[in-house]
Image (cartoon, rainbow, N blue to C red):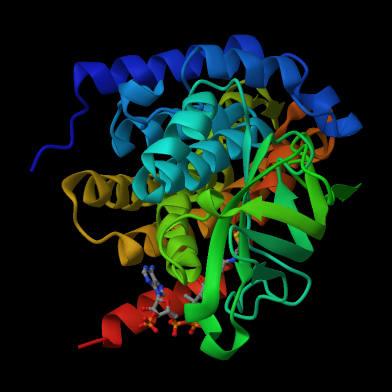
Length: 380
Ligand code: COS
């Protein structure tokens, strides 16, 4: 067993670390305050190849493995989780979904633009009444021969307004339940597609989360992904990989908050000495670091499983479940180590604490991850 990273992995990690420090850190507090989408930063991430890391170079991607992707996700998330969720959705939900299950024509038309960052993607599964209970789709896609007609509402959609292309899950045949669900590629400019209000969120405030409305949107049949009825499996398979990305995001939030707490504890003095010399603080750092290291091993194992062609439903779910809890615990402790300053925006850790919460909710709540894990355990 070898825990060391290759030269290439280290280069990717360092490139993401440098980018986060020089391009994401300046303005991260302001973007969070103003709920401002990081347009310039996303453009640069596209140019540097962060938006299509695992896509085959013949479609404009970086051709990298999942380990490289989680290393980059961790580094970007240490500084700006609003930017890293955009990276995660574009890479592991949209690009992966299209590359794994799209037709050659769909890949040429859409994936090439998404992998290079010329266009941004969104993944639209959740609805007002179908978040965790994802088979209860109310959005309908009625088959009209050479096209489908889409009607319905999607909620909490990351990149809701900033995306150009949307992967939309909808019910075609209600009688067939989840086997009557389809997935479609929808373009933003199409008639009847409407971006609803932007959500005012607790965390990841730089990313734009919207309600989307579909009113008689005509979708050509060639924009269906996979065979008729494949949509629910498409969503589940794609989300399994997405969860590895979010686990890496949670890991990055925890590691970023820990780094700040450690540095602060070495300069802040109380009772005549730096606070890291008080066992109350030193033991907090020890606990934080240990849990981060455990989360990192789970994240890496899930990424490795995906790269090896192993099933990663359970390892991805375990990584997300654990890393998101570590993100919450560590960011709360990082605020505590900072004392009064931890409650102030310029010290960053309060934002990280707010950002951490969503990692326990999106791409499957912690309770859903426990369902996936326990069903996997009890399958045989
Ligand atoms: N890969 C492939 N197929 C999968 C799968 C996976 N990871 N998970 C489930 N499926 C298949 C099942 O095999 C089943 O197909 P068959 O009937 O052909 O056997 C089908 O999907 C339905 O599965 P199941 O009966 O387990 O569905 P449930 O309604 O019990 O729900 C969970 C399964 C809870 C796992 C699913 O609804 C889920 O992941 N919900 C959370 C969705 C989510 O992450 N929402 C966040 C929105 S994106 S930000």
